[in-house]
Length: 128
Image (cartoon, rainbow, N blue to C red; front, side):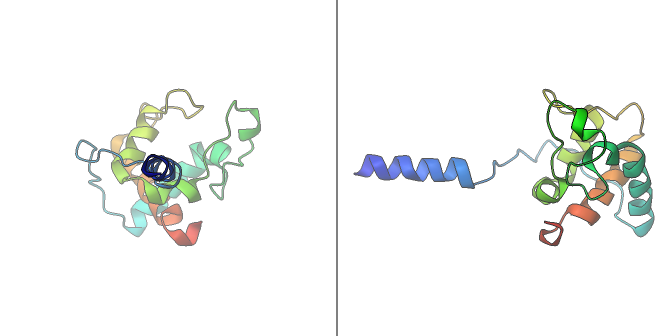
């Protein structure tokens, strides 16, 4: 009986608890989320992200249909990831997914502006 309870608890944790990221080594956002930063990030998002993630961030942009995997629904993900993790994913891409690396097209400050836009737009439970 105790073994069954432990197995059920383990399954619950694996299924319903989001993985915890190591945040100590993530870069810290040096750009304040001012209206100006968020506006710049919105412009960069429209230029390079909306094609796949869609205007609403649901992963339904016009380019998404041609991808091997659907882009993530940002309204379901952004709130659960620290700024530094989002920055690294944008700058370096995500191996094994269609997420491209944008670190050569955008400066670090521009990527932080995108992070600020994502957090302002999709970073709360209200965006879900």
